Image (cartoon, rainbow, N blue to C red):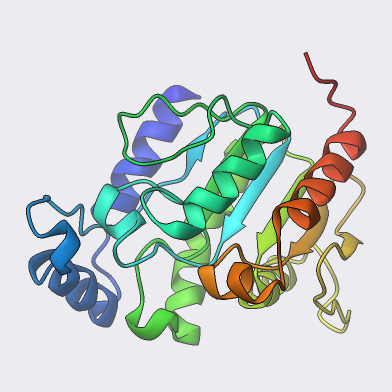
Length: 231
């Protein structure tokens, strides 16, 4: 199993299939934002991270330009990560309340995070063919994450993209309508459930669309569904 993960991760990191994404991720890594001017950016596809036997899989749409694309780890080093990881910590899905860099000691407890699209897209807007191309990697991840029970999609675009993925690979019928809302839950098959959540972006947090209470309540609900007991 470990060899399979190493092979997959090597394949992901070396991918240069989508020219637009390769050009943009490398441009961001070269033309750094002022506050991170002295840092070495990752500038490559971002791998999933966490407990590979986890029952909860957290899915973001793509790495952030100066978050995952800089640090090399999903939901690390930006405001969205600050909010999300703090909430996950309060529900004991992670061991600490912060996610700042790859060597900060963060451990996912019964959970795994991965971006559907492994590279940061311009204006956070991936093209359909880019998503479809990256579905190949997500499918391999899901096959290896064989203990997973619940997929938590962060944001409407990530949720809708997950629905397209599940339809493409025949997890659900193509005519099924799965509409996004915060906390919505759909059975994908006998084993898997897809749940939607507002994205933990600064915009959503600052406008009150999502707050700690809403996110924590959703995570508690997920934990109960998974029958995970707190220590």
